[in-house]
Image (cartoon, rainbow, N blue to C red; front, side, top):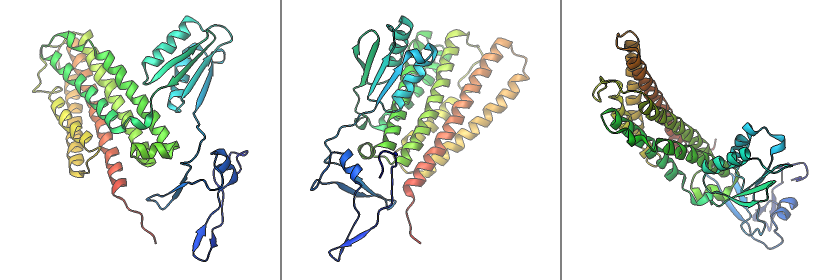
Length: 348
């Protein structure tokens, strides 16, 4: 391995020693980078794919990712994006600096960023430079628990929206913005964790998921976040517009909500279970619901109801249809995960 060139692999010849033991030498640069020496122990894992993995358990070297952001090189409206990119990269320390004291606008962006994430705190503020560190141990935050939390928040928003449409007080939706922010924060946390699983063997082990599965879970998290966008849009619609009197939970488009609730519950339960028939049933129900909403929208456009009511109903139908579409995507991702779990490696 040539550390100067950035190479991550090389060919090593298998040698036979003692007449019965096969050995492969370790690259010197890898050994020194991990603070190891002669007689130190390493752990060797035999992965299901047949790959051997060498882990420097005895290493005394602690490595943490650090990102530096110079506000003088970035327009203010892009600072938030760079902060999010730093967070998703798995950075333990983020340092924001400027040739002059950070402006009020820049500090406001930092505060909004901290509120939009999990576990970041400002540890040093020197006017021209602010340092943030992550206090979260990603390996102690179960992936599936966070995904389940996202589902519960989205399901609650849909339930609150339904209750308001059926005559409940509008104050039921007062915390819809906070719920939306929490869903977004969980999405960022889960994407950060998935990235760390892809990089770190120890985090992969502690979270109990493979690198392949982490990549699929990242797709699933994004579908949930998009469902959250539409559940929030429904709540915002109910808060800002008059609810039509002709709405009824037993007729379209609201009659789709109980179907979605049953289907998404089945899908979330199969994050851990391995029941293909439940995934099939949920997907079939969602496809049927999506088709019903498409037909409803066609009929609605040709109806003679008041334009404001028609627009309200059309927006409700479209958001529910998109929620069903994202739920269908989730079913397909779960089928990918289950198939990968059930697959076996065979030699020819």
